[in-house]
Amino acid sequence: MNNNITIEPKSTIKQAMAKLAKIGERCLLVVNKNNILLGTLSDGDLRKAILKNKSVKDSIENIYHKKPLALKYNSYSIKQAKELFLLHRHTLIPLISEKGVIKDVLFIESILNEEEINNTNLDASVVIMAGGKGSRLEPFTKILPKPLIPVHEKPIIEHIIKRFTDVGCNNFYLTLNYMSKLLKAYFEELNPSYNINFLEENIPLGTAGSLQYIDAKINSPFFVTNCDIIIKADYHSLYNFHKDGKYDLTLVASAKEYVIPYGTCELNNYGYLEKINEKPHYDFLINTGLYVLNPEVLSLIKKNQVYHITHLIHDLRNNGKKVGVFPIDDDHWIDVGQWAEYKKAIDKI
Image (tube, rainbow, N blue to C red; front, side, top):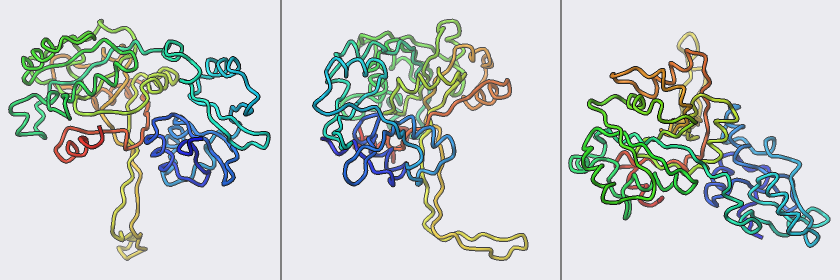
């Protein structure tokens, strides 16, 4: 059995997120030191914990599912396993002995064929905000638009698009302004199998202003992404999270932990030293630049003026709409929009 998919209950949320990111699965098996199955821990369990203000340093002990789905080793049938995979849509099912020891694991791809697994392919449109100047990547962006900056043998934008085509998305909108002719020429030469629509801004309209041009073209929830980020999250889970939560907009946030490498001084009301906090750590959820939007929210966008995604979120909240947050591990977010991160991205992709 692959021990990479097991984790002990004293492990932290951060360790669990890192392990899921490393192995590319959506679920871990929680075991004791004797490899006895105690439960399962999904990416959804981790998200719920973070949204309830759990620290990434907290243990998973109180958040994992303690009544796991499992089959008895050497006494199950393929038909039985297939029915369970189709019913529950789990990605794996552990096989255990009479005493509960994990003997093996069934993965969904070993039981279901590709068509059965992918029968829920996303049929969602994707808007890529590709009109910015990319000033943080100068001097390259004095010559090439930011989406065409190469990462290995492909431009950034192709890496982004592939993440979506892999889950069934085939309809893309590119908002253009800076060096728009070069971007158009690139895709004309590429002649991709997916559908590309170009939305041109006459003047820069901010991080959400150009969304006004897709009004009435999309009638179901759609993705919006910056053109300098690559998100390795499960897009099916993100899309379902948005719909199941009945959100009007969902933003993807990276769970980041910052440690101050010094002792910080805390003062009382009289200005005297109260205490010193030695190397304190803080947990933050950082907006990554990937969103899911309902088409109805487009009516709030101000016409022909600079309008940022932060303005849209503010207006949604002021109108009583629901804004969701979908947490991901920090390692699942690759920011290619500045040189320091670009160099790291070369190693990550």
